[in-house]
Structure formats: C-alpha cells, structure tokens
Length: 231
Ligand code: 6PG
Image (cartoon, rainbow, N blue to C red; front, side):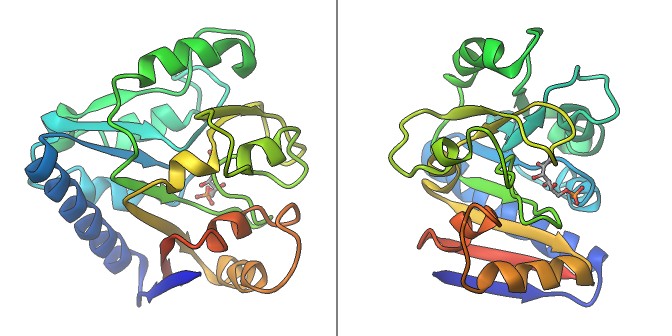
C-alpha cells in the first residue's frame, strides 16, 4: 500500500489544498493530451472543495466530469449526487466542463446501465483524477457492506465499468463505477473529515475482511492513495 496522509488544521485549508492538487493534475492532462477527466463523489463532504475547484483557472471546456457513484433518484432530488455537483462544482469557471451523469430515466439502475454506458463512451478513460469519500460504515463509492453485487464491483478482473448496487445502508438503489476503472490511473484522493472518520480509517487500515469495510479494497489495492483529512 502506498498511502500518503495529508492532515490539515481545518476543512477550508484542506479544500484549498485538494482543489489545487486536482487542478494541477487536470492541467497536466490537458497539456499532455488536450483533454482530462475527473470522477467525483457526492455526499456532503465535497461542498467546499467543489466551490474552490470551480474557480480554478484551467481550460474546463476540455474537462469531462462524472461521478464515482450515484443514488438512483432524479437529478432534482435532494439526495442526487448530480444535483450536488451541479450546484457546487459546475459553476464559475467550471461551468464550461462537460458533465456525464450516472443516471437516466429508467426504473432501476440495472435498467439504465446500457444507456449510461453509451453516454460514458465519450469520457476519456482511465480518469486523471478520482476523488472518493468514505462513510462511517467503511463504504466508499457505492461499495457498501452487504451490497448485493459487492464482490463483482470489487473484482479487479471485472472488465465492466459499472455495477448496480443495493445495500441495507445505501438509502436507495445505487450505481457505481467498479473498483478497477476508479483505480486504473491518475490521482486517487480519499477525502474524509472529522474524528469519527479518522477512527474509521484507522479501523480500515487494520486487518480484517474487505467485505466488512469495502474501503479496504482501495487502501489495499497497491495504487497510491492520498488521504486528505481535517477535523
Ligand atoms: C454517496 C457517495 C459516498 C460518499 C460517502 C461519504 O453517494 O453516498 O459517493 O461514497 O462519498 O458516503 O458521504 P458524506 O460526504 O456525506 O459523509
């Protein structure tokens, strides 16, 4: 495991540092290939980071933004990650970025997979940047303990990009990028805040089954992971 731990005095300083790290990666990709891609997490933690990143001076017209995972709710729903990204990231300079949602108008994520995959075909992959969050139960992306397709989503040899996921702690059906495409290349940042998540990270770094704390699959992948933490 190659784990870089970056602890910050407060959340605002963390948000600025993470935004700078991410913007630098995106700019490097644009300079090298004329395009860049980033997969971000929803939830509540990234709000301040998104706000600062949205102001970054880079060629956002060359950037594709998608989500690491999505809750299967319409984009105007209070729990939609797409809505959270639209409100907090796709504004200011970043309004010029192209957003590719992990949602479509189908009853269940299983029914929407092919249409979402078709839309994702235009996204440069592997991602230049993936920003993950973590729940107090040790989930990351929609890799939840007890998830009905957890093993499949974490299988490093699974060639599929996406998996539909149902889990007791998930709130609603989910769709998630699988572990392999999230980790394939580029910057992998794990953004966590608060003492509780620091304790959970400590537990995840200890021995124990991946199925109990799926974030272990990221931490044990052998890919470099940068953990951004503030109290
Ligand atoms: C989601 C996520 C998820 C999130 C964590 C942390 O849609 O729920 O992508 O993996 O990052 O649950 O969520 P908070 O930032 O709200 O604590």
